[in-house]
Length: 482
Figure 1 (tube, rainbow, N blue to C red):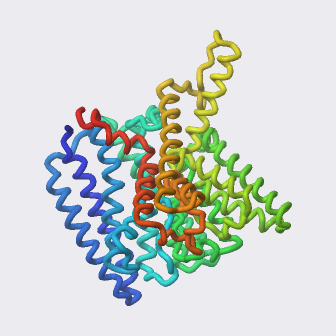
Figure 2 (cartoon, helix red, strand yellow):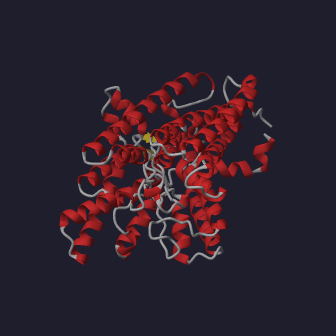
Figure 3 (cartoon, rainbow, N blue to C red):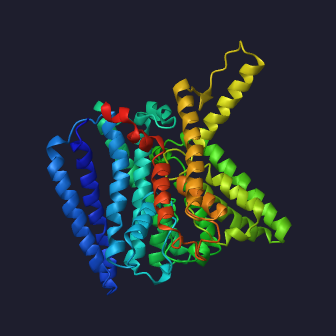
């Protein structure tokens, strides 16, 4: 068994950092004269004491490189500990949630899923809504760093293909990893600031602009209003589309853009495929709305672009009642939600990269059937893809489908109707956000779901966000014996 001190040291520091972030909603509620600031003060103290104490107790074992086992433990440990402590303000203060509901809201936030159990968002203290946005913002930043620095080393779902980019956290490459992390944080912050300023310039209040910028760039989708983005029509929808797309593109390409390197982002096959597939889906739904419901083209295009991109990127905002769109748009939304954004972005679900590898593998197999003696290497972005990458991608798809099926059945056994159970599993494992069915509240909240269903959804969110294998490996006896 590996030494756990390096793992608990990092987790302790991150929990303490979460306590620092709680000072922002604390200050907001304090300035507004809302007594809810006391909940954030108490929660911040708990985080600082618990996190700081854990880090200090583990400091003598920190430093140096981490083993592969420690990296697996750290990745899952962070996404368990952070939501647990992030739920504290929602239990201690408004909206005074139960432990299950508060943890659900926090897990949904940190995994950037965006499903909520809260009804009456407009009446919440500003600090409570801001905290929900901060949780998603932190989760989005965290998953980008994990995707670039940890998953290639862990060889999860074919991510080892990107290891040659130099994003290695082991051994002597650690300073390089820290440099990349610092660059990512800067890009992430500037994108958020640009989004907030754009929203404000187009008519949002200062608070709404900040709140929705936090949840747009992170492709999280939580809103400070029960009506979600339905409160903001017109130009604001187009602005949101632009920033949701940016949030679901590879962030390493933005780092290269900042360095004056422009070609890689356009030459990246997943970027081109992702933008192209979004365009196809938007136009298909827009044409359907015009021909079937007689909607004006501009309105059809705007509503389709916003809601399709929102689902495709895994943001989960909605500007209209999606359940009333009809069967064809509904199927489109389900499909794009199962594709997701690009690798090393805040986007979620399977990711475009894996679909491209899968399609290429199918092409190669068809060629071999036609001419068994031919040599047809699988290539991606001009590079040969190793068999280990292809095998990892196939395993990922298999586990994803199995997890989706098992979770759907398990949710249906809690008493949820079939459509609700399937879309709840879909939104959890793919970290999309919306759930459809008669048990879902008018505002999209799942507060009425059975407690067991909420815990199953939380498990699905965590497993989906951490790319399945990085969690499942922890349940293997062999992992603990190494």
